[in-house]
Image (cartoon, rainbow, N blue to C red; front, side, top):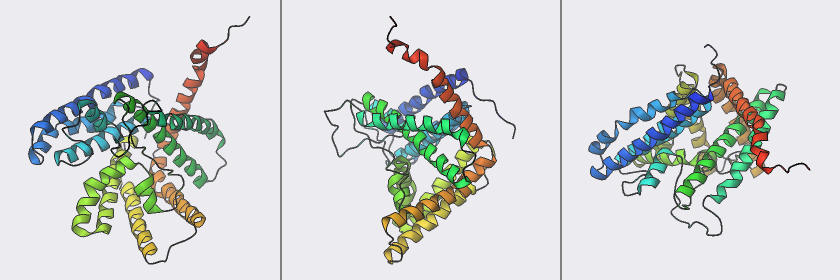
Length: 348
């Protein structure tokens, strides 16, 4: 496909402004409709007009980073949450106050109900450290990428995994920081739990990676299927749904027709996750923790490199994402003298 020019700041700010208006408008309408209609077909029919709007929103962005986050926030999370709301399930409820409802509908946040916000720190203070850490490490990665040509493919793709985690952690932490402040100090759950230290496939997909998506997949796919056909069928259903959603993500990012490779990757991991649990139950797989880290991390890197990154690399998406990252770092670096001017000590 022909190379695409890097997006202009003006076009992306305009798209961001529209998204900032459309997503809350859909959430306000959904809350209004849900408060007046009973769960089931009537509520689902009333919420349906918001779905095309949320599915279209990623196309407003030329930047692949912004299109990626819009597809996850709006097309994946928001639509899924509204479908669950129509069935009286999920994190949204018509009785939620307006602001928490709007924020929870359009953003990857989950309010903790079991612990109180500490009074010793300002709202969202626990997210300041991950914000700073991820921003610093992402800047280091961006500056190091021009010198990574000598690395083996798997090592380079492991750096891609690190970059994906740091980018998501930075964006999610910033979102939670602002959301906690807007909601008067509400305590929010973090969405990652040391995902780069992988000792178990079940632990990674169930308790470490992108926990908001895990919660939604559990309610929308795993639990209904498990209740009828058992745990293994529930796992397959959750991974099937995740694979289909990643096929949609592939289409958004590459503008190419999906070929089922994302679906194959997730069903492959579903099969190995079930096999790992069976092996543990039978006493066939109980290695020392260091060995488990080494084996499972190697499995993740190889399968992600060959089955997940492969389609994106062939489409040139990795090059485009690196170009955008470098452009942002250069923009920030070029603006540093203006940002630091108020803190300079005047010369004598």
